[in-house]
Image (cartoon, rainbow, N blue to C red):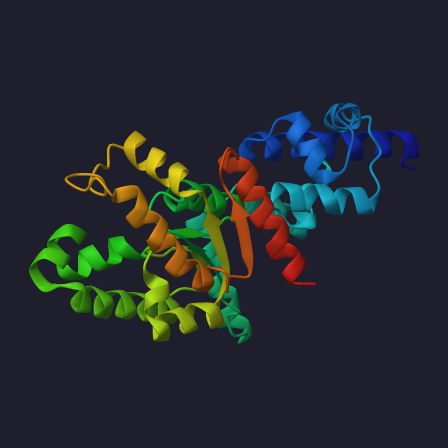
Length: 287
C-alpha cells in the first residue's frame, strides 16, 4: 500500500522542481513571478523547495505567469512509467520544432483542422518588437517571424534598397504577399510587423481578423533614444526637425494602432514584464 505522506512529498517535490525550472527558463525572479501569480515570495520559495502545497487555483495562476499550460507544471512521479507519463516526459524535453512537427502529425492522423493562433506586435520602429518577439515566442513555444525579413528575402535586397529602387508601392505589395503567405503556411506564431503596416487598410484588416494584436507604445522621446542606442541614425541625419516629424507620424498612426486588442506602454518596462503581460492577456482572451 502506498504511503500517502510519501506520495504527497514526491508530488510536491516534483512540482517544485518543475516550477523552478520553468521560472528560470522564463527569466523571472522569485519576486516578479510571485507578483504575476498573486503568490507571496515566501510561498514561492516553499513551493520550489517541495514543501508548499499550492491550490489548483494558485497553480493555474502560476501557469499563466509562466506562459505555460496547467498540465506542463505537474510532472508524473519518478516511478510512473506508464505510456502517458513517458509521453509527457518526451514532450517536456522537446524543442519547438519537434513539438510543431508532432502537432501536425497528430492533426493529420486524427483529422482535426488547425486552429491557428497568431500574435502580431504592432508599433513604430524602436517599439521593441524585435526584442519582445523572440522572448514571447520562446515563452509560448512557437515561432517568431519578422515580416520585413520575409520582404527582404522576397526582394533579394535590404529594406533600404527596396524603397530606394522600387518605392513604397512595391514594398506594400511584398509586405501584403508575405503576410498572406504566413497566414496560409503557419499554424500560428508571434509576428513582428513593419511600423507602417496600419497604413495599408487591406493588410491591417487581415491582421486584425487573424491575430491577437499588441500595440507596443512608447513616447517619441523614448523611440528616438532607442534608435540612437541601436546606432540607427537615419531618422535624424540631416533633419533638424526629426523629433517633430516623429511626433506627427505617431499622431497620424495612433488611431490605427489603438485598434489593437492590447496596448502596452513599454517605457521603462523590462521585456520580460511585457512578455508576461501579453501572455496573461492572450490567456484571458481564450476564456
